[in-house]
Image 1 (cartoon, rainbow, N blue to C red):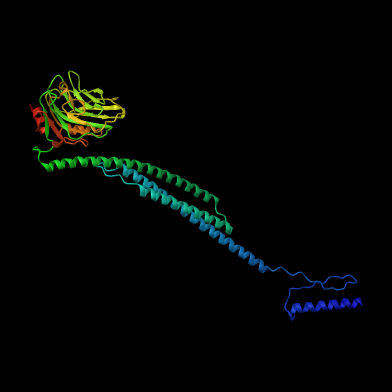
Image 2 (cartoon, rainbow, N blue to C red):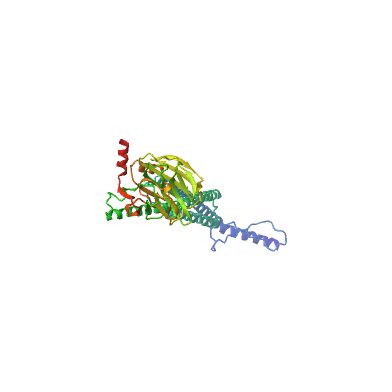
Length: 437
């Protein structure tokens, strides 16, 4: 019986092998295979299925997809690097533009018109720098978003490039902040300069308007309102001139005048300004054999001036409250200077300006021994210290500049006392005649 079973087994295997070789199997190939091996006596069956061979097509598909993903990752990484290089170049260009703008601004400041053009307001430059800084921050945020997207897709963002960009943007931000701070400081300085420029312009315009009004009146009988002289021929306590205007509060001033005197001893008091509580607020006087003295708030400084030669002399006195600095000019030349003359004092407003007398009370109580004897002209006062070049041009008759606080006008000078008078004068012609004689 066992022999019969073995024969049937070999017979079945032989038929299966024949169909496989000839392809005559009616059923489709399922991938099953059979092997023959020796069997022990008493085995129930001799059929053993062969393990199916692995499917290579699926593996190739997986590998192909992996290669495509890697290729896309490499392309994305390359595109990101190109974008970052472009961003770096653009940021470098913007920095160069900022530096060029700053250099151009400095050149414009150095080349500012000396005729008094108003400074330009740098608000637009500050706004542009702020917009540029905001643009750089937006780009940095975009780069960080690209990094996050790259991390999510599995691509590695180059850490060296990121660090370089962050370092570069940090430097740019510091430079821009520094430039903004510098521009803010320049803006503050320009505002102060503009305010001073406007005040000076308004003061000059007011002086010119006053002169124009006097010219339009045309009733003085002089060629121009300033071409006259005040004549005080006697040493008395009732001959003097009074300025119609007073002084404002001042922390510096320049007093200039033409005078001619041969009186002695001492020419007296050509100028005095008194206020309530201080009759000697500003006094210029020479009495006895003493030198000419300048009094401010009753503090005294002796001036190295000599004016008793009977000729026209141009004198200017400057003073500033800072350390009480003063200077004395005669005929355009500085002959003396000093300090500690009523330092940090302010000139009080609302007093009386008297020409030819020294005041012991505001506007009166004159002493005949201190009266001025001679002639005065073009008494002008400024509320600032004039430059030496401006003083020289007035002294050599190159130009005439009226005072911005008190100017020499026929309508502003009142004459008191019989014998005192205002007479026509062309100072430069008179001085030239003196030189020729």
